[in-house]
Amino acid sequence: MTKKKIVVLTGAGISAESGISTFRDSGGLWEKYDISEVATPGAWERNMDLVIDFYNSRRKQLHEVKPNAGHYALVKLEEKYDVDIITQNVDDLHERAGSSKVLHLHGELKKVRSSVDENLVYELKGWEMKKGDTCERGSQLRPHIVWFGEPVPMIPRAAEITSTADIYIIIGTSLNVYPAAGLVNYVKPGVPIYIIDPGEVYATHIPNVKFIKEKAGHGTPKLVEELLSKAG
Ligand code: APR
Image (cartoon, rainbow, N blue to C red; front, top):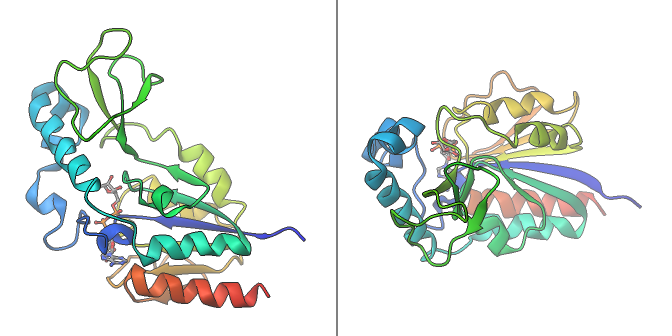
């Protein structure tokens, strides 16, 4: 029997209990840093050192944290479902937990790429990228991150995956950032949608939503158990 397809859209909230700050909660990253100074192409042109430092500290922190019960529950879901994860996160906690299909919409912290050819992508050893580190064509490396104002190349693929969902789960995202927040529009009519988030998520426009107002580390394992028992 073919397995039903579950598509999961995750955001910073799923990694919060691992110790990684979200962006827009109180005390979140965008309260401490000015987006336009660290996460835009203009910032890279004006102040490369600051941008490099910002992502080096994010990467250093990533080496110190581990996946949590929310990430692991999504791995368990694969026992009875065909699971695709679409994540806005640049951490690798879904992969480290063991999820087999993970699509990163906004890039990956542990990778760097050429600043002249976006196809030259490299896995960084350790956490530090330095000014003067170059690609094979001799140009400065940059973080493999989709900055504000840049296109999101993975969106068409993510939309296609979303349209195949039999069940759609959204975890830990404020749904503030487009085009990621618009992916839900590709869910087929009638497909059940779950949102796991302890905060206020703007979702009045999303039909068939079941809210689970809990932290990911608690709400995800509960929903996963329920879905596994329904699958028989
Ligand atoms: N479990 C689940 N959700 C949580 C938890 C938790 N333990 N803690 C916080 N949250 C929720 C918040 O209530 C909020 O809805 O996670 C969400 C985090 O929202 P944002 O900080 O806006 O993060 P996200 O939606 O992932 O941001 C999208 O914006 O800055 C860019 O590129 C960055 O990928 C990021 C994008």
